[in-house]
Amino acid sequence: MRDGFLGGGAARVSLRGVWRCWGDAARAGTERKTLKRQTGLKVDTGRQMADNSSSKAEDTASDSVEAAKNASDKKEKLADQVMQNPQVLAALQERLDNTALTPSSYIETLPKAVKRRIDALKQLQVKCAHIEAKFYEEVHDLERKYAALYQPLFDKRREFINGEAEPTDAESEWHSENEEEEKLAGDLKNVVVIEEKAEAEEINVKGIPDFWFTIFRNVDMLSELVQEYDEPILKHLQDIKVKFSEPGQPMSFSLEFHFGPNDYFSNTVLTKTYKMKSEPDKTDPFSFEGPEIVDCDGCTIDWKKGKNVTVKTIKKKQKHKGRGTVRTITKQVPNDSFFNFFNPIKVSGDGESLDEDSEFTLAADFEIGHFFRERIVPRAVLYFTGEAIEDDDNFEEGEEGEEEPD
Image 1: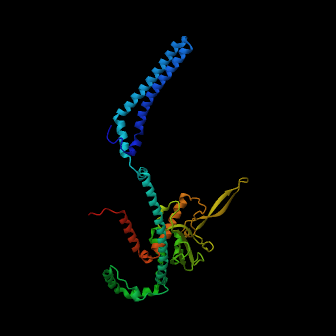
Image 2: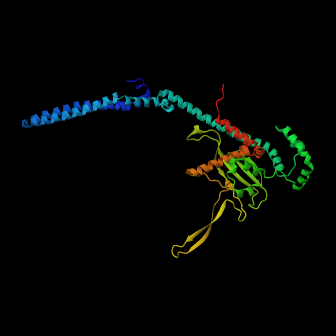
Image 3: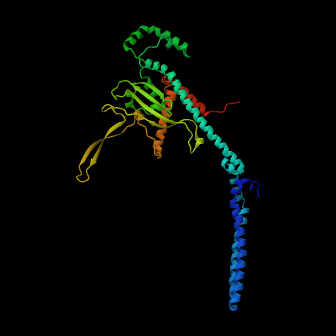
């Protein structure tokens, strides 16, 4: 037999087919001996009961023994052929070579005392997960604390964007990487400075037009949600704020979208609240990797008459079954729009699972909410200019990674 056929637990499992052939041959020999004993017993009994039938019984017994012997010989020959066939042996060896020892199968081979110690380590790991959950709760408290420190800067940002205030010369001073090129370009522009001055007086641009709408267009994740009929509404978006849950309240954060007066709805603020969980799951504590969004709530948009872009009106013809007459009815159906963002799918509270499409939609919603909180709101100007998008693209390329030479 080739080396390695009887090595290790996996090999023993894989060789069941070989052992089955040996077992068949052994059982065939045992059956032959048993049959001989039984046949002999039947012959002796027949002689005692009737001498005139002994010859017939002996003939029958002889035939039975011969048939059993032939069957046994065939099985033995078949087993020998299987074990001597190099193709069969090669196939078995290949299965053994491809069999990997998994971590779980390795654990099963350990002594009981070692398994007991491993269980103790798992208990410690669960306690670590609970400590980690407390760590993230304190991180949330820190986020709330520093959000209050950021807010005056964000308020000033809102004033500059909406033309409520003008930055001073010191506030608007910025040294860019291309400062020399910009200086040369500036010198050329001085040639037509009088004409530009006149045009500026006529235009009189207020603040930074379409600031937040431009961000929506620049970020693929958001632009995919925006329809053409959403664009005039988003041009009235004046600010986006992040609010964290108060101390003692369940962990959550809210997004506030502040709108100026418009012809579409009467709300001045649209809100979206994301509920979070920062504790290990009792049924699967080792899956804990920090806070996760588990649900979200939107708000009611008070649309003005005929301005609701989240629904569309369709006409449908109906035929009367009896009279055969046809009538046309109008019906409102859901319509694709960014503003469906404020009417999210609800996670079922009774434990019922969502269908695959709903789960995908909800996961995308959670991702967008997190992106607003972590990226868009804190770094809005860089997404307006596109600099943050270039940084994100470079980061994603780096993640794919190539091995660096030593």
